[in-house]
Image (cartoon, rainbow, N blue to C red):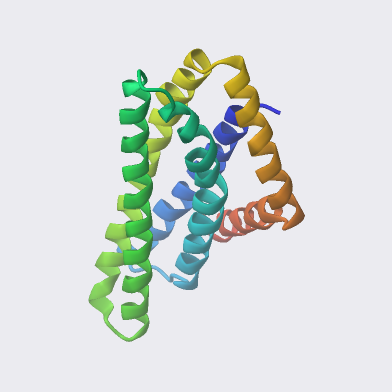
Amino acid sequence: MNAINIMMEEHKNILRMLEVIRKVCIKVVNNEQVDYNNFYKIIDFVRNYADKHHHSKEEIVLFEKLKGGDNNRIGKVTVEGMLVEHDLGRLFMMNLEEALKKYEAGDMDSRVDIIANSIGYSDLLKRHIFKEDNALYKYAKNNLSKEDLDEIDEKCKEIEEKAGERKVQEKYMKLLDELESGIVF
């Protein structure tokens, strides 16, 4: 198992969801028929697949290795930037959920907040994923020892197996497929 390659594959799934987000927001802008419950499904995917499943492997396993050692200032600074972006993504999801509740209570103007937080999250994650795939992960592969990389693989394997038992990957890939097929691309 190569944990970094698995995380890059997960990025592809997250990018697919970002396209779903964009398409749903375009429907809102165009005053088309929108099932706003799809936004709750998006929030579920983001919180439980992108954040709890994917980001947990980064934060608990990979980032800890990258921060290691007193002479690893580049790794520490880079990781801190990635953590800030993870937290900003969580804020966008919290604000999106709040805007959805206002919309459901009859506040039609909150649609702009639904769009703003959705697109803000999407833009943030596209840039974030690009940096991880093209800089951070390459840095990890080139600068961590084989022992560290093996340990990352082993710890991520354990996380993957536990998630597999709970069918996390299966559930969220099915949800992603459903959202993609339900929204005309």
